[in-house]
Amino acid sequence: MASPPAAAAGPPSPARRSEPAIDLRALGLRAPGPVHANLAPAALTEAALARHEGFLSRKGAFVAYTGAHTGRSPKDRFIVSAPRSREEIWWGPINRPIDEAAFERLQAKVLAFLEGRELFVNDGWACADPRYRHQVRVISDLAWHSLFANCLFLRPTAAERTGFQPDLTIIHASDLHADPSRDGTRSDVFIVLNLEKRLVLIGGTHYAGEIKKSVFSVLNYLMPQQSVFPMHCSANIGHGGDTALFFGLSGTGKTTLSADPERRLIGDDEHGWSADGVFNFEGGCYAKTINLTLEREPQIWNAIRFGCVLENVIIDPVTREPDFADERYTENTRAAYPVDYIDNCELSGRGGHPKNILFLTCDAFGVLPPVSRLTTDQSLYHFLSGYTAKVAGTEAGVTEPKATFSTCFAAPFLPLHPARYAAMLGERLQQHGSQVWLVNTGWTGGPEGEGKRIELPYTRAMVRAILNGDLNKVSCAPDPVFKILVPATCPGVPPQLLQPRSTWRNQSDYDAKARQLAELFRNNFANYASEVAEAVRAAGP
Image (cartoon, rainbow, N blue to C red):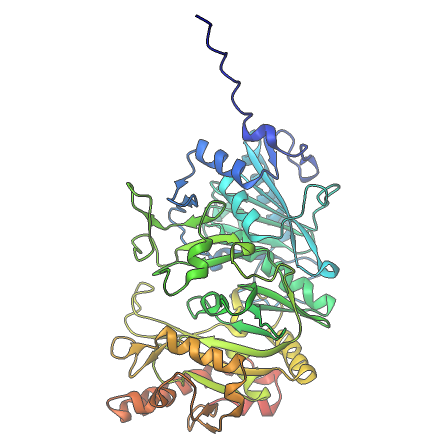
């Protein structure tokens, strides 16, 4: 009997599929362990599984848990106070300074921690418009962080990476914890931006969103120097080439409403507006997945597959099906995936000057109209305000709706004074005639706990009416408290829903709550009143 054939040799390990080794000595890393450069998503997934960093869902998405930190740590973010940038930075509770000597010590600590460790390098691009492109290198001690970076940043080919020289380097030492008494940090977590060295240090947290938002913060500093308006918004484009922008804080519907099967998605979170139009800063999406369903958000649902990363999503141990309704670890469950996982994305990542701009807010007080038209002055007022509301239970001690004002809808990521960004928006509104709308995706009929959330099909109908021009044909009347222009009708929406006062059982309760929110707006806007024209100051409630 013939002998069976010899077993074939096993496939090479992911490390052997790396691109040519990257020399990290220029950063001060003298003797790292194996350095895996620009592994393919499949190889990164294999490496992450082999290192027991997580496991796969039924459709092959890599599932990771971030431990104690399930969201960003904004109070642990610092900017190096260096001579060339010091006078430009908007210093305060958002942009905390750290001196150069402390940064050098922390950098030495990070490099010492990474010596001898297996490292993963992802080289990608930020900015879809080649004229403003930045080369971003992410160095991490977790394979799944490299997979995350591959999802979120633009992906050059191997040939395009030849001679890659990073404009910005991010080093993420996830298990290195700072000593506040020695390192000058607030806690054991640190996110430190050195804008002059174009170097970011992250440690003490596994939450991958710190990588993404560090790049956005740096771009918010660099882009205005190139006459580009950086924006925390999603963007899509219609069949006729009309671009729309969706500004909004987390939970207001930015990703959900821009993922429209009738329009091509440019991007879901970060964009620049140049003299030639809009372009995506990223190459991927970072969608919240809490209560995600196929029926309500089919594009996002279908994007969650192999090559995607799921953060802190509960998985059935037998079927490996995600339970998107389970928030036992956090309400901030996330999916990171390449933008081309959305079926009808705009592969160029670019669009023309926006015809419509939507400011999204989730008003848990239940008093803002679900849709309203803004004048230019009102647009600047609400842009600088950046209002939304947290609902009861989202944070310890929050037992009733709590107003949140995040200027420019992006306060945690703005190195410069908000007036700089507002001025850029105002110039573009005047130049291109873009129409701005305020869309409330929050409550009606009463505040959170008494009223109910505005149904998503109604919000989609309002957005559709904005984008196809129907609301331009409808008469509008100013809201008696907030002054914004409320349309009398909207196709597919009950007329009474457009007038929030009429949806409350006790209208005097509505009046009191509206006055309360108006006062919060006025108190907050006092922070910016001296920086804007009188017409903008007068445009608020």
